[in-house]
Image 1 (cartoon, helix red, strand yellow):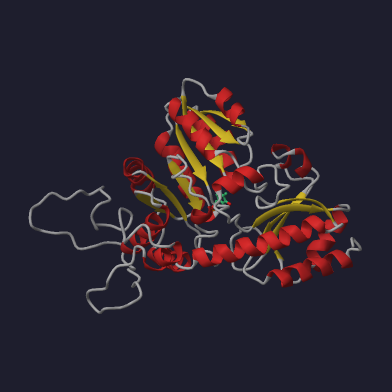
Image 2: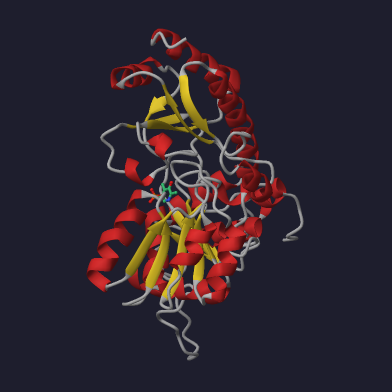
Length: 392
Ligand SMILES: *Cc1c(COP(=O)(O)O)cnc(C)c1O
């Protein structure tokens, strides 16, 4: 596969195999837990990931998906897991040892927060510093002799903040540490953390990569040397592998990611611009808006596609916020994101996450995942909900 083909072509053809038995055009689903082992006397690597022995070591549908992801991102290798959290945990358990120090963005996924704030420090004596990773100088100041890993989210979930991957990568490397970037909010094609110097790129494939809200999954991308460790430790021996059926579903979703992401990005920009002008709205953050605190950095890093994630809040009290959710007709109040349909989540004042977010978020806000509906229909839906709440 020529790496320099255009994205949508790579998404369709990357990783595909030819079915030599029946000539099927679509990839068959290899629902098998094990494979025939050769009997020619050559050694068998029972715990290895290079040959087909057992589906926790390697399976065909997993390989198709990992090769498609490598073709799209330029990564040397990729490890696939049963969820995004399994992929995050895989990175932490593969590269952290007792006594190591980790720097992590305060704005991060809830399981990342719990793993690094509670479980890994308590169980394995890992030292952790949570900080605002959009402040590169703060990251620099937090580095210790035992800093082994810097882990950031860009764009951050849920605030959409952008951290300077290039600058933090060079800080990490001069300290002898690794940089891992959870880029779930952007998908693997509107930001390229590995090309910007990150060592490990992590995605919840549940979100944009699959895109259809029908499977969980996670992946870790990077150099072969690092990914081999992730596969050996976390995949084969911790065992959170993705099923062949879910790998097949996600590869099918991934084939349309570039088209979907272009549409998500266009629509989200139109909706964000509408929100910014509406008197009903208290604030809106979207990396593609000039008013976003890291808009310049987003322009440099995100190649003109700012993904489909918006954070915003409306005026009015808690009751008005709940009424607004009830009045929406097209948009559903639900977790997850990157789906074909628009989803919104309300972080109310009681949410214990608010203190970790910038001041403007601390009165509560919405995380809005723009689906593939037409922008005009989403804007109409928001407008009628604002009107019903007497906000406009
Ligand atoms: C959803 C999400 C995860 C966790 O992924 P799962 O597939 O739900 O396990 C991790 N990071 C980010 C940024 C996410 O949005």
